[in-house]
Every structure is written in C-alpha cells, then in structure tokens.
Image (cartoon, rainbow, N blue to C red; front, side):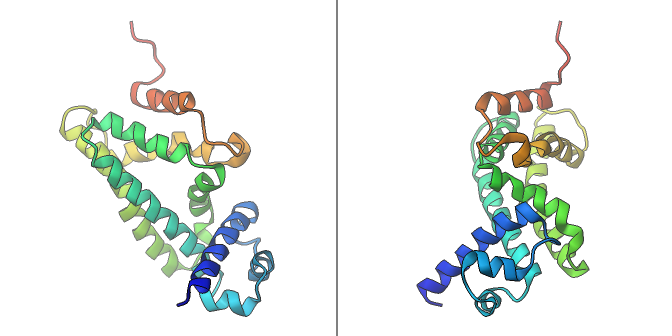
Length: 195
C-alpha cells in the first residue's frame, strides 16, 4: 500500500466519523461519504467493502485509543480513585466529536448485522468495559471501594458521563477540569453532605 492510499483511508475515516455523528448510521449513504471526501464510490469501496465495515473501523479505531489510554492510566502507581479520575479526564477532555463516538456506538449498534454486533461487543468489552471494570475490581480488592458489583459500578460511572457525549449538551470544547472533578467527586462520594 502506498503512502497516498494510507492518507486517503484516514481521510475517509475522519470524514465518515463526522457524518455518522451528524446523521446516524441509517441516515447516511456511502455516496454522501464519497462526495464529502471528494473521491469516487469505487475508491471508497476499495478501502471499505460497505458502510458497516467503515462504521466498525471508526468504532474500533476509537476503542484502540481508549484501550491504550486505560492501560497507561492503570500503569500509574496511584489509587483506584485516582485511576477513575484520570479516566474521566481522558474521556471528557476530548473534543466533542471524539466523545460522540462512544454515544454513536451504543446508539447505532442495532443497525448492524448480528455477526457484527457480536464481534463489536467482544471488542468493546475487551478494550473498554473489561479494562474499566478491572479498575473497580482492584479498588474493591484493596479495600478502597465498597464491594459493589464491579461491572455495575462501571456502567454507573459511564451513565453519569453519557450526557457529555452529546456535542449539543457541551458545545465543541472539552469539559472544564472543575466540571470533570465534580462528576468524579459526585460519583465517588455522593451528593449527601457529611456531618
């Protein structure tokens, strides 16, 4: 593969990601993507056999980034609470269109074939949910966290973060550090005032 072909593939992924976020999976045609990139449909299909493969490539690329970030966070010799804070900062300091990829994956998964949903579900668990759950398990084992179900704890955290995956809710900018710290503190400590 030549350098220009690698560049075109990346350009397709970036453009398609933006269009999927704006229009959703069902509302977007490959023709619109090829026009936005400025290439023929044949050139588009050279890189991706269909819309489903292109969509999964966008989601998988994002999950690879998340996996690398979580691995880096977990390697830091800090508390599990600090690992959670660093994870929230990593996600919520991303540009809005990047954060929106997480929402896109969860909202549009039902549009894909059963085999693709199954494959993506495994990748999503291995690279993201399973790794985040491991932080909670470590915190439970070292006595830092209460012995709640670690996967429930994971989904509860993501549920608190989910509204911030919508660009309309947050604008195009990363969230302010204070907002991120408030989210994490509410999650870890609750809203009830201590006497």
